[in-house]
Image (cartoon, rainbow, N blue to C red):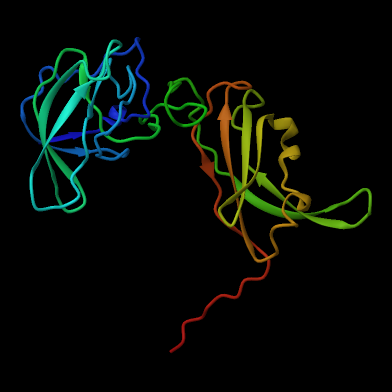
Length: 257
């Protein structure tokens, strides 16, 4: 059997009293494989009350096996407000080729097993400021915009010299009602970010040579991403990223026969 698509069992997820807690009180006893973007390791220290999508998380009071030969027996603990190990029972664990399987039994009410660690990505159809829980919601712009990187020479008003500048060009799909976040990358490294910019001021997000000249030389790969917001600091929509713009002189490789 499998437990999958339950990333909220991660120790990095803080449960909310507004949502239904995970409960393994009715779990069918048996062998389970955990399939999660946050991993399949049962935590070996106390996660904290109301972590892992439940009120009373279950953690492993011992170590995970390191060899693939044997099934090991381990003690688990149910953490509560009163005690890190208010209740305990045995589970069986086996390390297979690159993943664990667990023999689990049903637990007490409002308690469930923790698996994985780290923040939990917003589920499909939800967004947040960070892209992770908490704060995931459905209220965000969902229009599709295709940004494009363009380069041009801009005069430096101080030195009267020309400077290489990049623009993240895209269509304003909201007729001025949205604001935009603009992210710049060179060689896949983040260079600068602009938040909550109205479209009439979008030129202020141009990537200037002063923001990259000390770290990068020409023959670099430039791209931009944008997020849409209904208003400043509201929940942003998903990233929409341009194709890579080759800035400089790139020699293409011809097939040799």
